[in-house]
Length: 579
Ligand SMILES: Cc1ncc(C[n+]2csc(CCOP(=O)(O)OP(=O)(O)O)c2C)c(N)n1
Ligand SMILES: [Mg+2]
Image 1 (cartoon, rainbow, N blue to C red):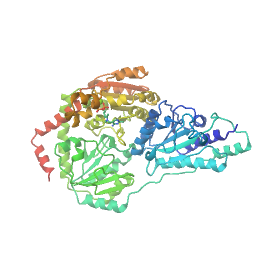
Image 2 (image 1 turned 90 degrees about the horizontal axis):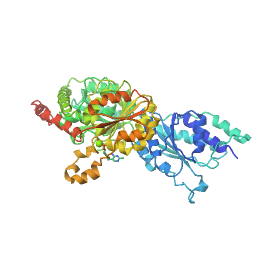
Image 3 (image 1 turned 45 degrees about the vertical axis):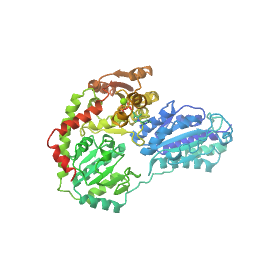
């Protein structure tokens, strides 16, 4: 029996490691046996192992998102590979380098009714940057070098310039178990396996300097501007100084969401903490907007400032949901910001910045009062959880209300890495991906809703692979309460709304976690801080179930705005917004 396939698998394992893959998430199966044995033998990657491929892929997504490094996934043939899809969709939309390695039956077992055999080539359609089909192992030097080149090429493509997932399709034959080289031909192939992988650094897109000149000129002639930042990758923290320097020079308020990596940590006095409420309360309208990151989640944003000239800075993709941008400047955003700082002078007109900041300060007061009046709301729970974070902890925010409510936590303070899932904005895979984020080496706090928790029960098994403390705070408001703020809540019959939209899972998260051997506690919004502090000091995962009121998030927002409106000075700002 030949050792060619064993060497082929070893070549794949060494190339992954040479090209910067440090984590390879394994799901069990037979067809992938040569790959798994080779990865274990080569021992250059961590090999977290997760039964459910869907959770495995979300786990890998979390590792890649938190570390910025490419992460591989290995599964067997058949429907196993299809379970990677949701995480690959998110990875595609959010630009996360995931390498889906799908083991397959060889060509002679395709299209003949062989078991566990489906058409896997290009299974992920347009959601991968590319598919690299290695073909069945061939005992030739060229075939071996081509396989190494394809793996390296796949990883380079996943890393940039438009990062995202790729598929490596690996047909394998029985016997699948490892065989040692014995012939001279096999020893020659083994020497090829031992060769180093050629360097393949992904290229970087640099913005067009004329476009930056034009934007700089627009900023220089417009003192009434704002910078708005939606969700941005963890690596964007490196661009903070450049962004704040630009804002300070231009005199533009910075409206930064929690997921932008700009909201927490030291920052100059251009930051606006509560811009959603500020807009709703009639903040002065900017005439120029610089927009970065994912589309903002703030309720007031989508209809705000339709007449402003809007410029988008984006790493590699077109981001203009309104199809109204004056300019979309694609390229390394950090470099673009630094280039803009150099191109503009310090403005003396800070009228608008002062107006926004004055309004923001008043909102801080009214919000504090509204939260005090609703101590069992999601907002109170979120603030308490943030207050308990140890230095260096990572926060992951679930979609729906948690990501919105995090914007009601005061900004500044200690720097925080905030992970969000805003590529496709799904409520799926949040537990598994937060467990993956622990592989960055810091404790992770995940805050998610009760429906989102129910959606990822399989992720609780993946949470066993957490390598740092993981606190999973389930904000239980009895269903998907984001829908209560949508028009459907008013037009649908109560029973229809409850059954088809609210979908309260009616389960006890602590009991579910306990059944799976995960530590769990149920506590109140006011005491959640203690539970978070304890969980983030302990090994492994803890589920923290926090029952809150059903309408708290909406109550706090409404009360904060109402108490603002009763103050006379708001009229000044409201008037100014129509200038
Ligand atoms: C995978 C996926 N399925 C469905 C949705 C639609 N969706 C958005 S929010 C939501 C309800 C979330 O409820 P919960 O997690 O309890 O958060 P809450 O609204 O109460 O804050 C649903 C079903 C989605 N975004 N992603
Ligand atoms: Mg809920």
